[in-house]
Length: 165
Image (tube, rainbow, N blue to C red; front, side, top):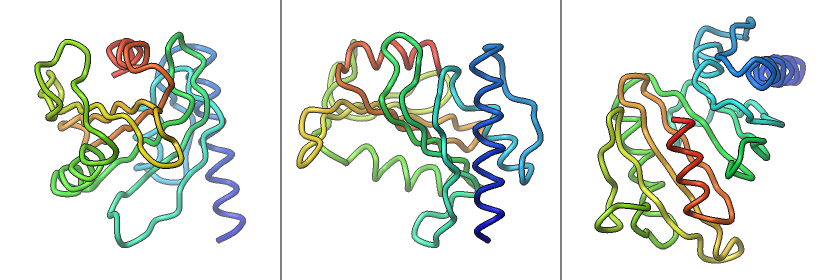
């Protein structure tokens, strides 16, 4: 398990390095078809990504947590997850949309989640230890994907998301 986790992390970092260098989806081999599919959905510029272990309370089939994205306005941290069915996407997105203080995404009328061409998006400002941090969370319904990115400035983060989604 220990060796497999380190191999998975190395593969994810390698895939993300390829994405950063060529600005296209990663095509390098991964531990599983799900890991490979997730690597192709991660926004360009994502760095220092680590593969997450599976756990029963959140039924994702592949997940990575990433550090600072090098793109303008990019997040300082993000989590990208792939699910086996829409129910997992809906449950996770519902939890993310209710985390912190929901705020309107730039251009939205209210703080509730909003539909976009590929799924749903919600914005929030963190409370507690990360007070003031902005989060944009979104789904890609056709890909059974959930992303959640955190940064210091909601407008900049949302502008990044518009280009990265």
